[in-house]
Length: 368
Image 1 (cartoon, helix red, strand yellow):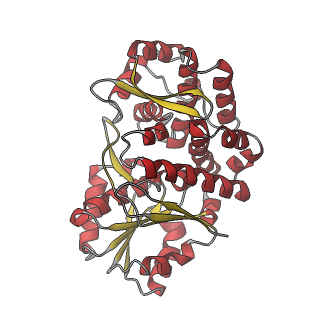
Image 2: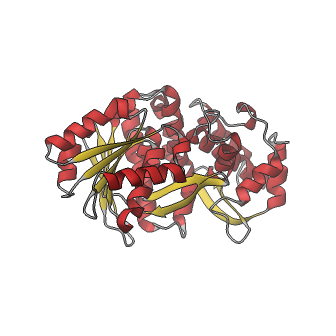
Image 3: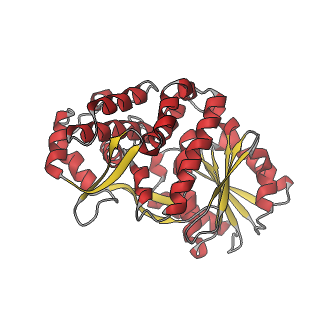
């Protein structure tokens, strides 16, 4: 069974996110319907050995000329150097304004390939084929594309919506358990933001999804994409409600930068820890109850995700973390922006969070 979720609203062309099994095999026919002159399949060195042949075969069997572009696996590929390399290969392969990019991979590839598509000849079409759970429920939907700099994560980017997203549940069976858990963090985040009943299912009966149960994963992907599609349709450029999707990200991005974007902390793990911190900070300032903060933490921890700084093998400094948070792209006019909560499923944006109280909180969390 394939579920189609429509993303529409604002000024962008509506598109569908298809969720189901066996979708990679249909890539060629679906891309051919978009009538591109040529296709560049952009992937990484890990995914290329697992799924690239299937993608290329599907495209070529449908009569779509396709070339493969491979970048090193890992967050470090979200860089100016790799963006330049990708664009150079896209040009070398003869793509033009009517060509199309296929982003075959996780969030790093979706961000990098999407930004390359946004920049090439001032913007060409692209299709997302997310191969990780995190990418299927989050980064592949909504048109955010970006690269990192040493000063922060996702600081250089553009809004560029895909023409189609194929979330093939079968592709998740090749993922390591840690990557499934990392994607589950973004799924939990959606419940914590705006759907308490969904969070309770995720933390209870649905928790088997965090261990790879296919039925639970399918249900979670569909519901999370529905939530994100609704939010993106209401606020494409993050002028208002879409900012809620950043729950846990201001804390989490600062942690990622501090550990150097290495295997110490995946993006999903950083988001999980950031969500737990956001709820504890909300409780410390009286915005939500201690019971809700504890329930959020328990739901996150039960999925095998970190909830405390002490879970990470790194010595964090409070003043450095705060500086990173103030340099986050969500900060405005020197003010710290945080997504906080008055309860589970009740998030809101605070664009002028008190830096002194955040500093005290970071120290209470164990940052020196």
